[in-house]
Image (tube, rainbow, N blue to C red):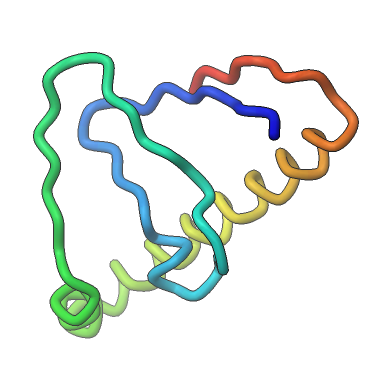
Amino acid sequence: AMARTACSPEGAFFGEMSFFGLATKRSATVITTTYSELSWISYQDFSEVLDGDIDLRRRMFDFAKLRQEVYQIDQAELEVSPPRHLHL
C-alpha cells in the first residue's frame, strides 16, 4: 500500500468521517512529530454536543463530506500514481 503524508495544524481533529458513517475503514494513521496532547470524546457525548448545536452538526457533516471526497480521490490516485507527500 502506498502512503501519503499530511501535516495538520495545531487544533486539528480526525474521526469525523467515521462519526457520520462516511467511512467503513480507517482512513488515516496519526503520528506526531512533536509533543502533542490528545483529547478524546465518546461517540455518545459528541452526539449530544452536536444535538445541542444543529449549526455545528451541519458544519461538521459538511467538513466530513469534503474530507471523504478528498480521501476517495486520493485512493483513486494511489492506484495509478507513485507515492508523493501532501502538505496541507
